[in-house]
Image (cartoon, rainbow, N blue to C red; front, top):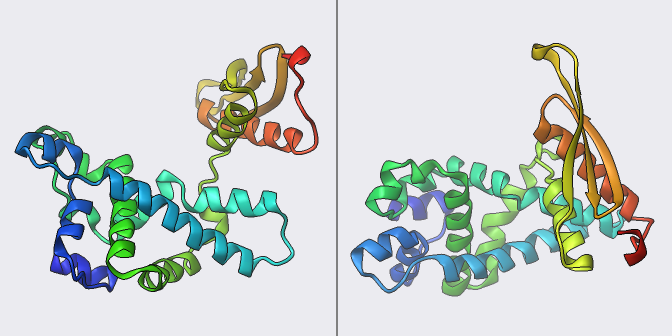
Length: 228
């Protein structure tokens, strides 16, 4: 654990907090240990969100709430957090159950992203907000906006779920062109209401494009019950 402390530049006063942050539920279940990192992950998610939001607010005084929200979503996405976790070698320090370890859990993006948030939660509990800022802000300043994975699909789902208590659906409309150069077009809809269309070189890319167009549409339109 000392090497991880050196990498993140923070020395824990309570080593048990760090151990808990690095313990996956699978390990706790197998070993009979009472503590694993999900509670710290919950805390770390909120702490990270606060620092990222404050940073973006100060750095982008002329941008609106939509830009700030999309930037934050991209920065704290599972994929982006997993890249940060990989960069600091977090997977080598995790306590995983035997099955999880053998199946490659130390490289799984969801596990890495969750563990990173748990470590941030542990740092916050151990030292408060200043060491979190010293840890997170240099990472934020290293982000290249055009390389961030903006997850429009997740953002759209959260928005629709909040407004209408149900997720949107996606439908493949067309797949044209030769096998090596297909273009997929996908529709995202809610009930009878089409929210957006998008195209891409694969279905995932087309879904993201459709979700982005839907978000753009919903920024200035409301979907009413009689339309669904």
